[in-house]
Length: 294
Image 1 (cartoon, helix red, strand yellow):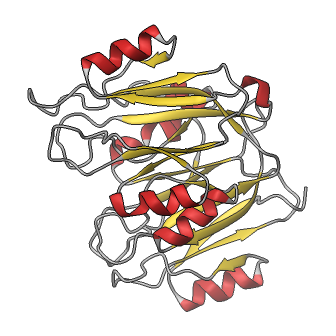
Image 2 (spheres, rainbow, N blue to C red):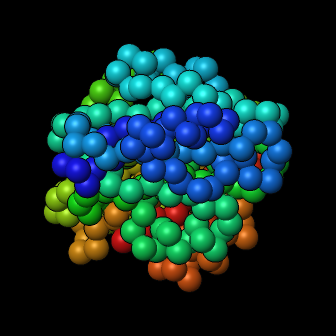
């Protein structure tokens, strides 16, 4: 049990750092406000033999929080963007023992695309939200490693917050970045569940951005995630759908969203598959791509 992370904390001042060190926490030496100004903010963790943390989520608006509260996630009430002027970003953690909960054994951060891609290629799992979201400065991403290899076994997507509680309660993890970012329309989030059994894993992902592609994947017996990832972005926008298969020999281990074209080549060189179809096709939102690792 001592190998599992059992608690996390955030420091903003030297006095807090001294207290956390005295209480047995380990500091991750990456400033979460790197390049954005604001306070020097650091994440700390502890491995003390109590119940392990199994899920981490980030929020950047209040509406993202209610499902977490109702599912007994714990909030670290210190804005990871404090003083930098960006989104109010908060970290939440959950200690679970259900079918879809696998203990976390390590946490780290990256501040550039090359390190991001290498981390993903080496089997780490990334939280979707940039900790420096809208603050300028470096893109700072949070990464974790689990006690066992996990595989993606279920996918869904939502266009409102009404079903968040049910999904969190059922073991889903939310990719905490809106697929409509910068495009207007509804807040759309992709969700996934993990298993330690590779026989239950998904083996292929596709994205359709036209009616002909939709029909092509339907005829090829892909399963549809029945939520337009471009919902509400205007009459000129394309309907964008995510598809998956379970048949195949190579299970999918991890999935993430890429929000910059320049990162695509880094990830591909590190063994990741990138679906080079923009989830914001046909609108003025940010370029977003599905990336996965087998």
